[in-house]
Amino acid sequence: VKIEIEGEHIENSTKPTSKEHPCVEILKQSIKELRNIQAKVGGIGGGTCAAIVRGAGFPAVVWSTIDGTAHQPNEYVKIDNLIKDTKVFAYLMSNL
Image 1 (cartoon, helix red, strand yellow):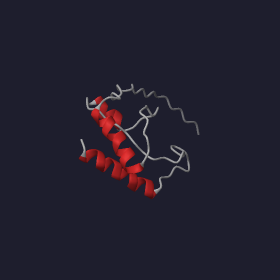
Image 2: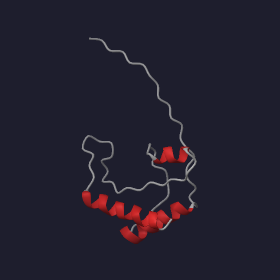
Image 3: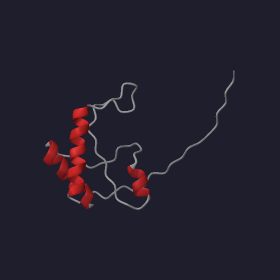
């Protein structure tokens, strides 16, 4: 059996949300308030659904507590972290 596949997928990066945008500041405040973590602003170097939102002309921010296994065969999420991160986003949305 011989299989040949040709294809190319190119997706250009969207313009990042400004570090000074209120949603960035409110997310940082939410993380500090609920997780006692001093968040740093920066890109993630990968694709998220935030790119779709930014591509439509809206600001977008992302946040997640990870354990260093992203995109690995043993990728997982701790339920406790998922709940805490959900609270961060609920706090963020209620303060926009």
